[in-house]
Image 1 (cartoon, rainbow, N blue to C red):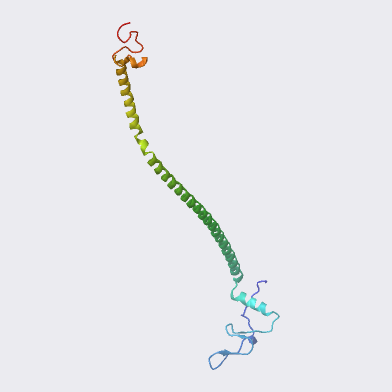
Image 2: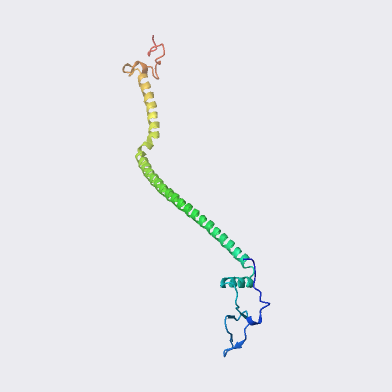
Length: 190
């Protein structure tokens, strides 16, 4: 369009209608009369679309700019919806992955709990089975004391002239006689 507009300032007399009112107070006239503009359509070479377009442009001259702004706004809204949709999809995928990871972790934790429970039961049984061994340090000390006492008794007996003949040569000296490393025999004579 070349930007032509319809102006209604120089309207010929024949294009206006004669005003008549009916019983209800409505204005009536003959032909194609637009009561809002008080115009009658005259013969023209323009098509109905051209006339409507010219009328629209005359009523709202910034229609094209407004339409362009609305198209841009609609495009931006579609882009925003697309971005939000992408964020939702990425968030959903992340939540699914996190859910799977949490489920796997829960399964592994359950398995670890079962293994720990079994180990605890086996350790309890082992502790119960090893209760007799708990006296071993006392038994070891007692046996060591007994060994020392037996050694003292053996040395005493083998050192005595009464039992010296039955004792091995290593134990004959004992407390009352010379030790195995001494040069003098057990009676004090050589």
